[in-house]
Image 1 (cartoon, one colour):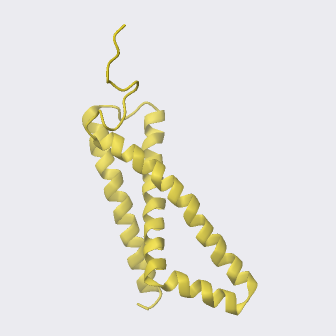
Image 2 (cartoon, rainbow, N blue to C red; image 1 turned 180 degrees about the horizontal axis):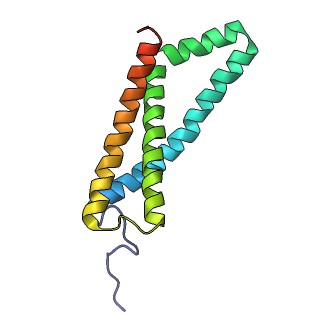
Image 3 (cartoon, rainbow, N blue to C red; image 1 turned 90 degrees about the vertical axis):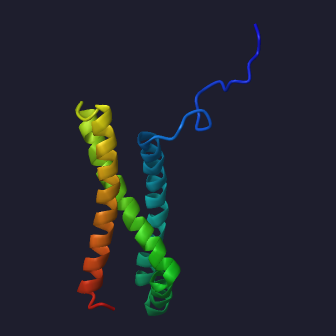
Length: 131
């Protein structure tokens, strides 16, 4: 037997990235981001239950530029994960496996996640009186 320098199993250094592989990785990343972002939500709720001073500190963190960027990312993670989950439900039912359909729905999931994120932030901003 001769040894070769080939990897034992396929990995990212072997294959050219495709929309399906990138969206699969993004789905996993957004799942983790949702779990971590939920900790921020729990912190905010615990601060609200702890009293005005703790809540003011939490509001200051969440209202800062970094806090708003984290919330925007969490919102995108939520909508992307939701849309991609719906896509997976169609796959579980046996629909949408054609190469063109997989690619088209992948781009649609990305666009829908981004659009829903922007729409929710714009609506939230206008409902808060543009504050």
